[in-house]
Image (cartoon, rainbow, N blue to C red; front, side, top):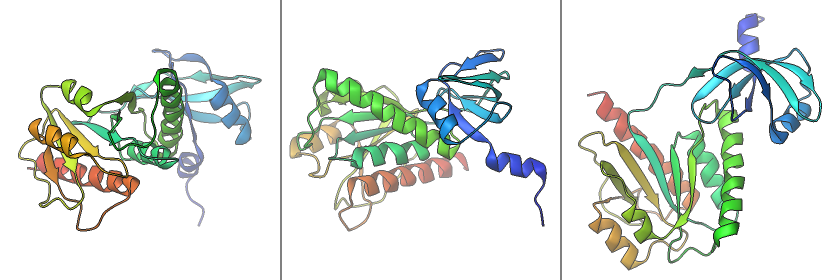
Length: 252
C-alpha cells in the first residue's frame, strides 16, 4: 500500500545547516559545507528542504539556484521548545576519534554544551590556536549529527580548561554528576536543577586530586555498573541516566 504523499515528503525532506536565518523569511545563501551537501544529495532547484540555524530555529525553504553557493528562499523560522534543565557534558579529552564519537552522540542525546576538560591523564594536549581549530571542526561534527537527528540547535563546544578552571566557572544552580568507575550507588536527583553537568573522565580516569576537587564542589558520584566502560560508552550511558532522572522529576 502506498503511503500518503505528506508522509513521503516528510521522510525525504533534507535538513541543512544555515547559521543565519532571516527573522521574517527570505533569501538564504548556504555555506560551502551545506552547498556541497546539496550537490552530493543531487538536489535540484525547486526542491524543498528544512534549514536549521543551530540556535533552536528551523525554517522550510525552497532551493532557488545551485552554483558554487546554493541559494534558498526560506519561510519565517519557528523556534523549538526549551528543555527544563540545561544539560552540560564535562568531558575529559579522550584519544583519537573517540572525541568525535562523543560529540556526535552527545548532540544526538540533546546536550546543550560540551565543556572539554584537559584532565591530568588526558593524552591529547591542545594549545591555543590548535584548540580553536579543533573546536571549529567539532562544531561541524555536531552540525552533521544535528541534521541527521532532526535537532534544531547545536551544543556550544568550549575549548579545554583544567578541572580547577571549570569548577571556578561552575554556575550557581548547577548540579554536577560524576560517573566514576566502580563507584557505588545509582544517581538520585531530588529536584530539577537549572543545569546538570554530566562528568566523564578520559581513558585513564581522573586523578585523585581531580576526584577530590569535584566532590568538594558538590558533584554527586554515581555508578554506571560494575564494569569499566569506554569513554564513549560512558558518555551515552551517563547522559541516558540523567535524562531518565530528569523525566521522572518532571512526571511528578
